[in-house]
Image (cartoon, rainbow, N blue to C red; front, side):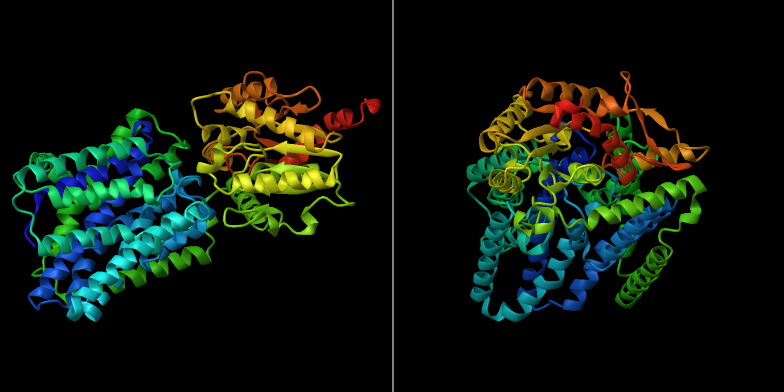
Length: 638
């Protein structure tokens, strides 16, 4: 196919929003859509090459895979090796083990499946994962493996091939839209619900092969300009709460299709996209995409910060393109030269590199992240973190995103042995382990679900309204003497519509009124937020422990924000319910908060990540809370 500089310019419009989004620039809340633009472009380019070679009777499956290897693998290996060296110095044992697993998943072309099983792109702690962005490479690699086989099987009956691709497009799109509300992570990461975007690009290739878009000058001018405006608008108007991928994703995908079809060389849009700076950015886009996430993630880890300031973010963007230029010139270009390396050499080097890197990652896993890199205090912190994470992942009374509340067994529910109930999210689940030592508490907890009435959270956590309704039905049916509500209220507030700052307080007020209606004799306690330590309390303490002991108190970076939210919740409490402030128990008025709790002759961190209480932290906090609960439940004993 003929070179189209405007396609490289379009790549610039794909990579820049992705970089700005991951840099944390809030004004481009839909920047993640740049990946969707890449999918359409990839589908178009790959299909164009295959169609042209089939038409000229030149297609070779071996040659196709060779070109993909030359295009994808050299720069990928360069970034993986560089990232592994950084990981060795910066990641804790558990983090390094997970990193090694993600490297092996990438080398096996299943990074998207790995991250689907391990993290939610929009709600998980993604900013500290150096290789998360490679999920999209997994989708493309799987597509590249399967797509040419359809041509081999159906090219002789082209109308059947086109009909099959159309059917796959429709099925994939509808599947994405249908399963997104219930299984958002699967829809986001997996090929069956992403294939339609690549097939949209393939449709462009078939259309332009049959009808090269000449003439219709003003139609192309208007169509290309409108498509560019729609695409840019999508980057600004979409947000992480938008259902994606879904029928809504047709907007940026359709805009990209319009740009590919209507942007002819004579159009003003083509002249814009063919500007040298945009073409240059487009040429570097693959390497820039590979480099940006490790740079941002490792910087956050090194600085022990979840959010970077503007100066640091801009510096990392410049560094991203500097490294991308080096990769493009000295890695990508030489390996694409067939006179430099033969096909056999390319395949041999690729397989050898995969084998060597896989062996190294298996060793890191076998060594459990090689904790010998750290001193005694740091190893104690990391061991505690690993144990706590394992305990949290095997909680039978916790509803994950892909589960239904009915999975809660009778041992989790209200009964004669545990007549009281605790409702909330994973933070409530963590605190429950302390409270249950003093009160017989049934446990109704679900991932990311604050125990509040209201449909506003549906866009972020679609399964939460049904979970909460199930829990409230249990309360109505079994009339417990005591119900405790606890959650990561701050996270919940951030994902509510921001037009009304008091919305979370109003939801709490409505929830308390509803509980009073369905269970008039039940006493209700609301427990406020625990101090939060982004990116992780373990990382913060480990950083201090490099040169000494871990401090037992530190200024909490979220205290002011949490205290303001706590006051908002308290204003909406009714007179019959009790609000308990965790901040008042763990922090002073200036925001200096406990980081550890005493355990015998030693200590343990109060939380094992950014804010989930450790078992010892939960026990200590529960001991402080029990007197307040006792006085509330039975005032005569006060």
